[in-house]
Every structure is written in structure tokens, then in C-alpha cells.
Image (cartoon, rainbow over the protein chains, first blue to last red):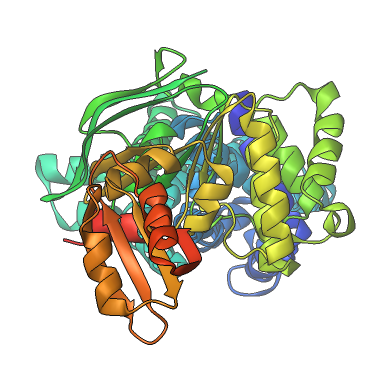
Length: 238
Length: 307
């Protein structure tokens, strides 16, 4: 675990030393800010002091941003050969994958922390449901963990960052909304299965402030499967 | 710690990269790993460092198998092509390497200063690795391999990209390290092996084809003494006949008629220097040159690996 942290710290430093981290933060804030406060069904039309508009927007912003964060992490190490440098040091394959995961999750947490002023602003405007808001943020983190798992797996499949990015989007889009569409267009046990797989349904129930262990297990297992597959892919070199 | 390699085999698909290789390297020994491209040098090194897993066989370091990865902390490795993180500066990178290799926090500063001094990185230490020239990058590669003072050093082509002065320095450094540590280095540069290594291992198509000191390899390859001589005041044809008649001589070639240059091959286990000298004295020929002809390492290498 200690090793994973050393790996993660290096990634975070690399992001903040280059402009990448700042670009991600600014772009995320611009994107979700516009759709939360200015355009479309914005927060003022709801007649209610809550952040559900933001949570709806952030779900999509993260969908695009997480693959952009994770695409480099393993693909680039494989392309440049530095993966050999790391893995022949006193680091296990698991530390390596966990380090990458930890770095991504921290990066997303920092980005999400930058939206906390939204929360303070709305709480000044009216009586906000603190529980639901905290649950919403928690839901975003869970969703992120799941998509990071997928993103890392995609990154481990290719040496090319762009391929990794598109692959991550392709896999995530099923969970993002295709399974939901499938669930609506089918019936019976198949519909229930798709319903179970849809990240949208699980996320919506958390974002409403209902913290069900089913949803928690869903996101954590999605993340877990992603990381296990990533480690398996990293081991494949042998 | 010694390195024991036991019946190592590794295939990529149907092609055997390493085919039943066994050898041992003792502490205080520098082993030069030679072979043409694709002979299996790098694969063997990747298995020793636990980056790859062998299909069969094992690598033991200090008696412990490397398979579970626990021996990695005792190994310093400079991979082929020397991959580094270009966006990091030298000091940050070495600090990170030291942390990953479990160098205790209070020793990290000392170790880095030591490496910067040893590898001559003083002026470049605050630069980003991506901005360094190839030679300096190679030095950073060596520094990261040695940062945790490992018992075993595995260096895949350590002197590529260095200028002649740096090559001399790095060779001296490797020789010095080799006195206490166990070193395996691979190279294409044959004089380098002679200059740095105690022992040479030549592999070809995944198999060991020669193993020994440069001297023993020469002897094996040659088997008998070869002398190049030049005579003055002698008739070449007559000289060839007379030398051929000596009891220890197996063959004589006339290399150059006007200069009267001859190549004399002795019979196995004999020398002809004395007999030739006596013959010249007797006939009144002036023996102006007599040079033992050594088979060059290049020739040995070619003979063993061209097939």
C-alpha cells in the first residue's frame, strides 16, 4: 500500500507540474458550471435549493473526463518502456495498478472539491438538504471509482493513449446509459438484468439521497473488476 | 549474492528466445554477456529481474528464487534503451527511485549525493531528464540502478550513447563495483568485454556457445600457436621449405613474396619460436619480425555465432 502511494504521488506531481491538472480542473468547472448555472434546465428554474442539476451534469462531465485522466497512465508506460523500469523495482504489479487508481481518484476528488462553492452558494440561496448533497458527492465519487477502473483497464489494453481513451468511452457508455436504454426496450428478467447493470439507475438513487447497500456494492464491484482485469493485463507481459 | 541460472527456457510463440541456459555468477565477478541481436540476452536479463517469467527453469539469487519478486530489492537494473520519465528532474527522479527501492528516508539524501558524484551528474542534476543528452540520460540510468546499493547489478548495454571519455569512466566504475557485487552486463562492443569483464558468456539463438575468460576462449578457438614472421636476405621458397621441415611446424603460408612474410602454424601443444630462430641463425637469414598472432575476440564471436 505504501508503494502504491509512492506511485500515486509521482503521477499527481506529474499532473500538477505540467499544466494537465489545471486544464482538467478549469475545463471541468467550465463545462459543469455552464450547464449548472447558465444553460438549459438550470439550477434557478428548479424552485428548490438543491444541487441535483449539478449532479446530473457532473455525471456526464466525469464520463468524458475520467477516460482523459486514465488513458495515459498505463498505455504511456508501456509505449515508452518505463513500465519495465517500475516493475523491476521493488514494486508488485498490484501496487502499480493501485497507485494509478489512487492517483486518478485523488485527481477526481480534487476536481470535485473545486465545485464545493456551488454547494455553499446554493445553501445561501435557500434551505438545502445537506444529507442529499453529501450523498450526491459520495455518489459521484463511487461512479468515478467505477469509471477509473474501466479507464485503467482500457489503458492497459493499448500502447496508444487515443485508443485507450476511445476504448474507455466505449466500455463506459454501456454503463452510462446504453444498459438503461436496453432495460427500457426489453422486458422480464432481461430488462431486470440490464436495469441492474445500469450505472444510471444506481447513481440516480444515490443522488436522491438514498444510500442503499445494493448501489454501493454495484459501484465497488465494477471498480474492483476493472482493477483486477487491469492487473491481469499487466501480468500478461510475462 | 551469487546468481544461479538453472535450465532457463522461454519461448515467444514457437520461437525459443532462451533455450535451456544454465550458468552461475559469483560475487566479485563481472560477467560479459555477448551475442548477436535476438540471441536472448535481453530476455535472460528480463527474467533475472522478474519482469518476465520463464517457461521452465529458475533464477536463484543468493539461493532464493526470483519468481515471487521478493529478490527485486537486491537487484539494480538498467534496462535496454534506458527508459526514464522525461518530465521529471534528475533529483526528483532519483528520490522517487530510492523511495520505491526502500532506501530508508534518512539515507536518501546521502545516496543521491553519492550517485550524483559517482555518475558525474553535478551540473545536470536540476534539469529535466527529457532535456539531457543521451550520455547524461545513460548516467541517470546507471544512477537509478545503483541508488539502493544493490548486491546484484544487471546492466543491459550500459555504455551505449556515451562518448569515449565517459565510456572509460563508466567502465572503471563498473570494474570498481564488480569487486564486491555480482555484475552481469550485456554489450555488442567486444573490446568493452575485454576491458571490463572477468568472464565472457556468448549466447546464440538462446543457447550458450562459449563460457570462459577472454584468454581461455582464445586458446579454445585457436588450439595451436600461429606466428607471423618476416625474413630478410632469404629466398622465400627456400625459407618455406626449410621451415616446413622443422619438427614442430604444421604448416607455412607465404603471405607476401617481396617482403618475405610468412605465417607459421605450429603443431598442437608445441611452439616453434626457438626452432625458427635457430634455423635463421644457421642459414644466415635476418629475422626482422616475429609476432604471435592472436585470434581476435571478433573472430571468435563470428565463428561461434555465424551459422
